[in-house]
Image 1 (cartoon, rainbow, N blue to C red):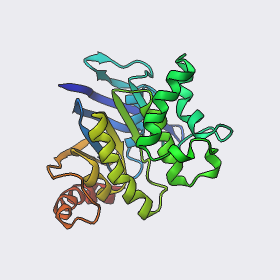
Image 2: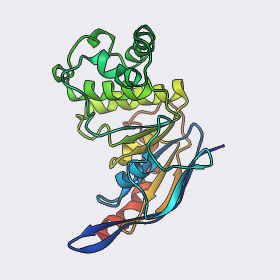
Image 3: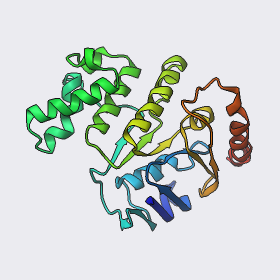
Image 4: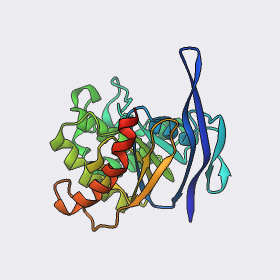
Length: 252
């Protein structure tokens, strides 16, 4: 069943008093429970596309459909996790995780029960009373993911959430992210510059062309899980993606 559909998404930006066409008609169907990774040349509009799906920006042409209905604004069924976790440093970890629930008017005891499940899932239980400024970058991203998951969205939108992490932390989170996806059955749309990351996480990878961007190719990743970044069996899939990506990068 189609959960999200992008129909001919076009987006312009002003650049040096000219109109720059960033997205040139993006079409994409995402089924319920899929994990779709978006890769493409730097500046091709992947994050812009994600923000349009989130309802944070509006397209100049085309529309996003969620369960067949047009997306016109943000909504609790689509939650975004940013590259920088956008956490509140004056709040403790548990309060950060519960923030959306509090805004939604969920009673304190219920908030606590819900948050404890996701704190445990993200291995944050012993840090529940720490302030986020006391945490490493990797731990902060765990908090940001837990904060998104407690809202129980249908769709999780992730904009390069592991880009600022060291390789060791990222590899650990790649395994954990797969386990979380299998536990929660969420539909995930994940932007990354890292081709290895895309093959480890994705059920399919959408390769964006250079500007004005379209989806050049959809590559299914039919390989057993959990997947590890160092698994050499993923190399042919990475080469397939890179062969589509290299000519687009050169156009830049």
